[in-house]
Structure formats: C-alpha cells, structure tokens
Image (cartoon, rainbow, N blue to C red; front, top):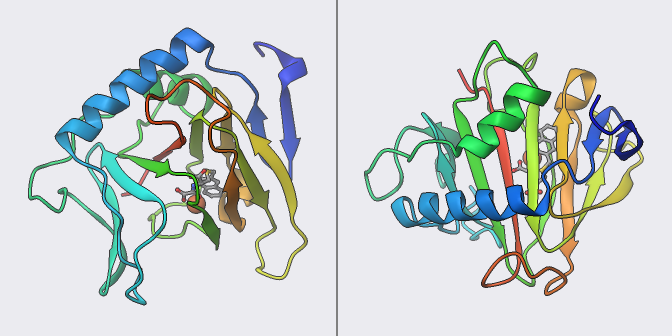
Length: 204
Ligand code: MD3
Ligand code: FE
C-alpha cells in the first residue's frame, strides 16, 4: 500500500486521500479539457424533464446519458460523434487500484458549478456489479454523502478533495450516494473554478 495513513474505509468505500499529487491533478485537468473540447459537456434531462444541475460528458466506448426515455449508456455524444478516449492518467489509477485484468469502458465526467448537486442514487445501469467503480475528484471540495444499499439506511458524510480517489467495490458497489454541495472557489486547480468528478465503470 502506498501511503496507508491516507487510505480510509467508510461504509465499504475505500478512500485514497491525495492519491493524485498536484502535478498529476494538473495533467488530468488538461486531459479532461481535451475530452470536453471533443465532446462538450451538457446538462442531461432527467426522465422527469428537468435538466440536471451537474453538466456531463463521457470518454471511452460508452457514455452515460439520460432523457425522457430514461437512464442508459450510449455509444455517441448527442452531437453524433463517438466519445473521445479515456485519459491515460485515469486508466493508470484504475490499473493500480481497481483491476489490471479489465479496463473500464466508460469514464463519466461530471462538472459541478457553484450550485450544482447530485441527489442520492445508486449506479445500477451496468451489467456486472462485481466490477468496482473508481471515482477521481479534482478542483473544489465536494461534500459526499454515503448510505447503505437501502434508501432508508443511515448516511455518513465526507469531504472529497482534489486528488482524492474512491473505489466502490463489494457490497458498497450498490450503496446509495450523492453530492450535497461543493465549496466553490476553494481550489485554484481549474481555470473556471468548480469541481470535476470522473467515474470509471465497466458497462458491458
Ligand atoms: C458508489 N458521482 O457519477 S463519485 C455518479 O462526485 C456519482 O460526481 C458523484 O455518483 C460525484 O454516479 C460521486 C462516487 C461514486 C461514484 C459511483 C458509485 C460512488 C459510487 C457507484 C457505486 C457506489
Ligand atoms: Fe453515482
């Protein structure tokens, strides 16, 4: 283990604090700028017709998408172009912390502005829940809320900061989670401020 003092487990979530150093964070932010240039972020419509406050794009074979037809993975950006490749820095973290045997086929990129939030939900649109999900945080801190596998389970909160990496595997893979709010302006990493979260997923 690389720095055992900074790895903690909370409700089955493995949290690697500061796993990406500032140079790695800057490199990944540039790689994401290239993804956003090829596949511009958009605010997807929930099945209820309301735009999400988080803007999103994706990289890899599949991107996550929602509209009136519901939640699903799609193989193109709404513009019709295929999703760009997953950033190398994110794949390196997947190899080191999640699996060396199978690479992810989706990197969902979430952009949080000052008032963006993500309600409590489970990620269950993938085919095989034995693969973990890996999350990387960049920019402003976000207040992450973690529950159990039932919506009514008690929750805990933890602040995710730039460079933190979280692995959700085992029973935690189907736990409820969300982002209550971000601390806008606390980090100088991103030119426009705000928070970016990447989640790497095996979809097929
Ligand atoms: C636990 N994103 O994109 S990352 C999401 O910070 C999502 O943008 C949040 O929830 C964010 O779906 C939280 C942490 C996370 C991601 C996926 C999970 C936790 C998870 C999948 C299963 C269990
Ligand atoms: Fe999620």
